[in-house]
Image (cartoon, rainbow, N blue to C red; front, side):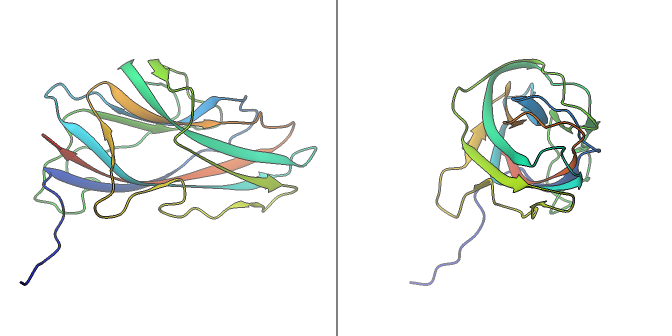
Length: 194
């Protein structure tokens, strides 16, 4: 029997990388990245990979832990605001031009401060967490494609129904004077059923 592996049935497949502005003074649990499926046609967003990295550009007054958590947002009826919007319209970020674009997706990353939370309820526990020690400028986590969330062929993806999403939050308050730049890599598909 000859077999050939192929992607699961989907209408669109996307990947993007985004970087924050010069983040400073973000409080504990401050949202720094947000992805919301606001689709009005019942399409699903299937998240396969999420990678995160940061680089300390100005040292904190006292060395500290810099850590982040990935949370599912439910009842996400109003998008987070502020920061920098990430365009996923038209052919932008498609991995194949002929595939469909998302119906309605809001993605954004923090600029110099945390995002302003929209209307949503975060799960109590994070799906994943990542952290490192920052004792001075130039320290951080290498931004890779899949260090925060990674699913392989046959594994369960994160499936976001309409008005669900993902939020990456800063877990520990950023100390005085410190400045960091955050890097996010995301790979996801859209499908009418899964």
